[in-house]
Length: 111
Image 1 (tube, rainbow, N blue to C red):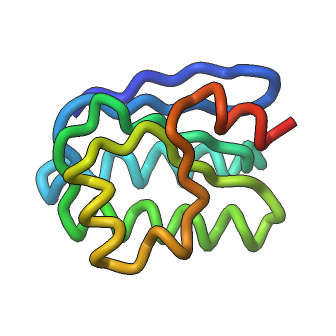
Image 2: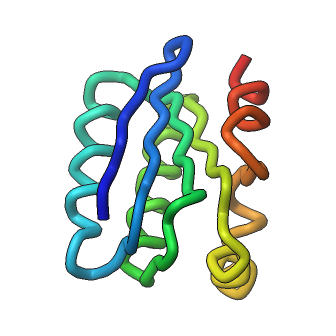
């Protein structure tokens, strides 16, 4: 997994490339914790290049969402591939997360 970071108008955009699973979820967890501790609580996670997510990865997303919601921030997901959308549907996460087709739509939601 590779994670690219970019700041766009005070919004942290994280782009995940590759697999998010038990071997690397802690890296993403640390990134979320670091930015939340700095009160950077408006985050978009672009998943267009993420091709797999395990239950550990889902848990990282859920934990970050809870912390960001508690701080009145925004945590948005975008670009979920079809197989990952299916995992989100099965797990019930589509009703918990705000999910957008692409980064541009997610950015509109933050303005």
